[in-house]
Image (cartoon, rainbow, N blue to C red):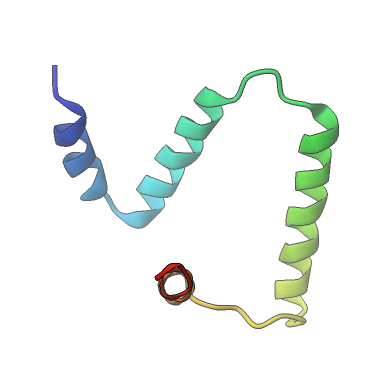
Length: 75
């Protein structure tokens, strides 16, 4: 059986879309008794943000730039 380090190295070499799918599946595997009220609130918020992007009501920041901003704030 491969170690966590080996798996991590292998999985990080996947294309970003594949890593996103994997991350989603891993998070789903950790979720236990999901509160339907919270889930509905997150769904509503996600749709609101999606619509804001589609209607160009917000400035979209590329992921790598957003992460760089967060890292600078944490320094």
